[in-house]
Length: 50
Image (cartoon, rainbow, N blue to C red):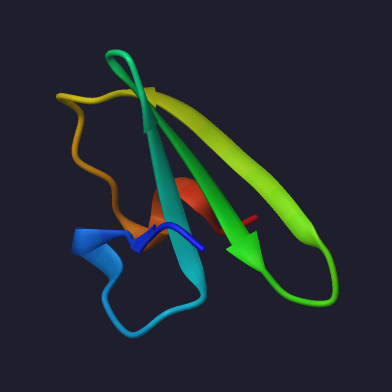
């Protein structure tokens, strides 16, 4: 498990920092990669909700 997404604390969203990128994923029955962002970009729930 990696850390919770700071902008979305209390959720099932986690992030992995890899170089200058943030890999945002959701934990459930399976792990779903939701987005890949530059580490300087902030994230909101609207960015990952479909």
